[in-house]
Image 1 (cartoon, rainbow, N blue to C red):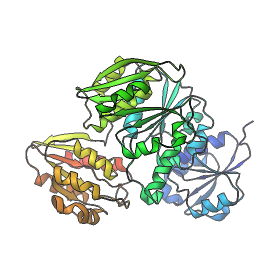
Image 2: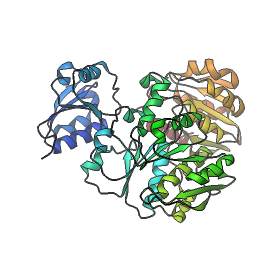
Image 3: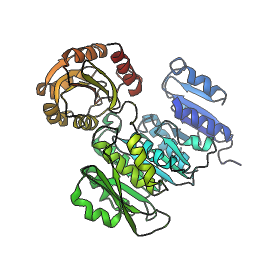
Image 4: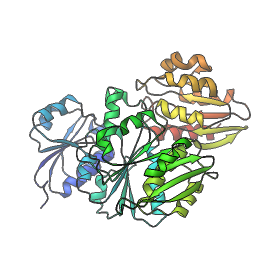
Length: 466
C-alpha cells in the first residue's frame, strides 16, 4: 500500500510540474488540493488536464484554509518557498518539500545532476547524447523539460538519470544525493527570488548537501565562486574532479582525474568509474576543431560532460563524434541566418550578465547587441568592459532599458528603443557587411514574452521577414 494513500496533499503551483505531481499522487490514492495564484481562466487548458484527478481547487491566490490540515505540501519550482503562507504552514508543523526532493527519494538509480548559472541545459543534453549514442539507457529530465517525478509516473528503468537542477529546485532539497554533481559556474542571477547573491549561492551548494566518499563533485576550476564552494567541508567529503582551460593546472588534474583544454584539444584524465575505485586510467584526447557550437564556454561545457559521461559507459569515439556534430540547443548562440553580409544570432536564453559576457567573447566580428527585458535587479556593471571592447552598437529595449543605459550606454553607440520589433529593425539598419547582430538580452523575457523560447522564436520570425 502506498504511504500516500488517503493522505491530504497540497500541490502549490500548476504548470507542467504541478500536472505531473497531481498524476503521481492520484495514482497513489491521495486526496489532492491544488493551489495557484492564477485564476482558472488564466490557467486555461492546464485545468482541464487536472480535472481527471478530482482535486480540490484553490485558485486566484493562496488561501489559509487550503494550507491548513494538510499532511504534506509540495511546491513546484516556480513557487517561492519564502511565501508567507508557506512559511506559516511550515511553522505550524506541516511538512513542506519540493518536486525534486520528493521524486529523488523514490529513485534508486544513479543520478548525474548538473547545475550552474549558465550552460546547464547544454551540458545535460551533451551528457545524455554521449551516453545514449554509446548504448547506455539514460533518462534525461529535471529542469530540462520533464519533471523528475515523471520518471516514477512512466515507470522508467534507466541505467542512469541525467538531471538538470536549478536553484529554485535546490532550495527545497534535504536528502537529495546525486552520484555525480556538476557545478559549471556561479554568477549573479535570480536576485528577485533569492533576495541576495549569498542566498543564491547557498541554494546551488545544496546539490552537495549529502556528498560522501561514494559521490563525485565535478567543478569548474576557472570560476572563483565555484572554487570557493570546493573549500566547503561538506563538499570535500566527495571525490573532487575539475575541468579547466588553464594548462598550469594539468599536473594536479592528472592526480585526481578531470579535463584540461589546450589549443584544439581536450585532455581527459579518466578515472574508470564510481563503482570500481580503479586508479587513474590512460590519458584521452578529444579534438574540438570541428566543434559546431560557438564560444570557449562551450569547451568548458564539453569537458564537464565528458567527465560525467565517461564514468557511466560513454565511449571515446562516440564522444568525439558528438563533439563534431552537436549543433547546440536552440536559443543559445543559435545561428539564425545571413542577410546582406550580416550574421544574426539568437541567444535569447541569455537572461543574466554572465551569459552576455560569454556570448560577446564568442565573436571577433563587430557586434550589434540587442539587450534588455524584465529587470531582475542584477548589477550590470560587469558588462562595461566587454561592451566597450566588443560592441559597435548597443540596442536597448524592454523594462530594463533605462537602467541598462545608465550603466553601459556610454560605452558604445547606444539606441533606446520602445518595442522589440523596432529594436531588430534598428539593429539591421545600423549593420554593415561583416557585422554580427546578436540578441543576448541579459534579462528574463517576462516583461513581454511567456518565456525565453517565445522571445527567441519571435526574434527568428522577425529576421525571416526582413
